[in-house]
Length: 167
Image: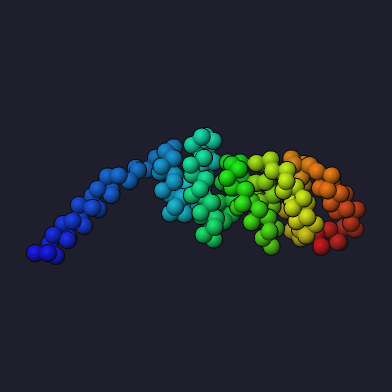
């Protein structure tokens, strides 16, 4: 008799949970948030189509996804598109990564939030870039948050012989 009651209770709880879950609607921030937690690649793309007001409460979910180590590139791209200052620590962490493409997204993110205090870190990381396709992101970031130190690093980079660019 106790097993029957537990089974019935479990069924009732499942029904209540299903009734409270958002229905599939890619324009609904609650649905996108749920799909972000499930690491659905489409959710990262749909997030970028939301207004800044709708994106703001979801930024924390994306930060958690990035910090969880899964779908980091998707998370970074979404955070860069949002340009929300709450993601600054994620951008700084990405900038320190050895992977130039992730570091470039970190640089773009810092530029997107206009964090001039990070320009020196972006400039310093630029001097260690080895992937040629990553240079544009760093240069774009430095253009958006210019500093005298950044200009010196860019000038030094431009005066290197071609085979030494990136190392």
